[in-house]
Image (tube, rainbow, N blue to C red):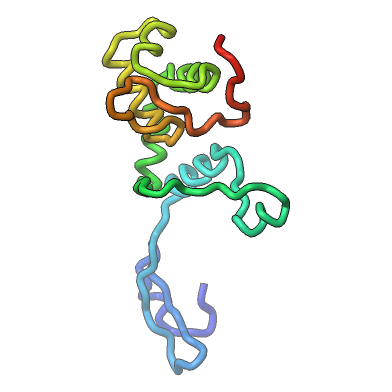
Length: 162
């Protein structure tokens, strides 16, 4: 609501606004970004669903922690926010179970998921690819079917074989 400026009656809504800089004599009409209620709700739900908090390197070092380092040669990639939200919805129902299994065993392979979860090759391969994309396991090593676990979550790496 603009009480002391003419021109508000010509605003269209949905991000249309009058802006007056401190050094300007008159306001200027601008078009801002419109964010619908639905988009805000989806964003808040996404933020609420995030788990864990990563301390900045300086805080982690000051607190005696070891800062997380990004391995050299690993390409950094980030999906757009809405694609990431949609991808979370499309996760395989066995995703969490397979991640728990991989973290307990300390290694990952398609054949292990096939045997332990009693699923087919295609589904197991898709799960392994998704888990790799999430950064939980390494990329396949040349000549090896077994992948290294990079992220053990809250649990410590396994000491012995199950």
